[in-house]
Length: 130
Image (cartoon, rainbow, N blue to C red):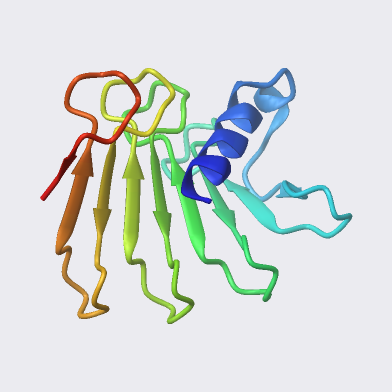
């Protein structure tokens, strides 16, 4: 699921309509006819760099896709995967190739990251879990 959401958001930001996105635009990323995301310009420079999403359709934002390095591409996805209202998973593209290569997870719900999964050799496959 994480990869699917990440790929969908990356395609939105790299598509031909990406330059027309403005702060506050509502989007229907799952194509069901209902707005489920809002485009955000978090640094006020006129370029949308984040997307707040309701990925499970319950009316509450549970995921935030971000361009943390300002290069115009989404590189981090923060998610509440268990529906408790707290971010428990970060998916990151640390090398800028458009694929997730690192995951940081709070698997026991205590608010602290306790699992890291990484692609250490660049083959787009997680090969190290700490």
